[in-house]
Image (cartoon, rainbow, N blue to C red; front, side, top):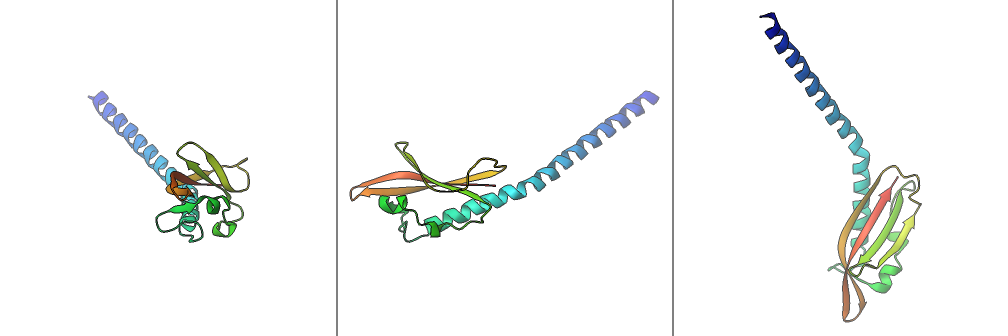
Length: 137
């Protein structure tokens, strides 16, 4: 009879250990996610600033090609220690870096955000594109 109670007790100890281990991993992931969330928020803030800029986009997210290539640096607000890269990728695969602050070497964390936009090359030529903001520390 003694072996049965010992087996039950050992199962309870193992179960309690697994529960404690799971809780500790849960709390570790909450603590590590805060800086990544900060980068996501910073990318969203930069993207919102670009999309709401009347000098770049009209209400339908259509930008003139000449305006988007000469991206006004005043439309980009970020903290000095933050690396930023803004790119536009058209459907045909052509990718162009519109703005970059800092290099990605030595970065520990990064986040990106993409939004669909349209680029007007000429009066009858409007092409779909993706505007991407990368931020890193």
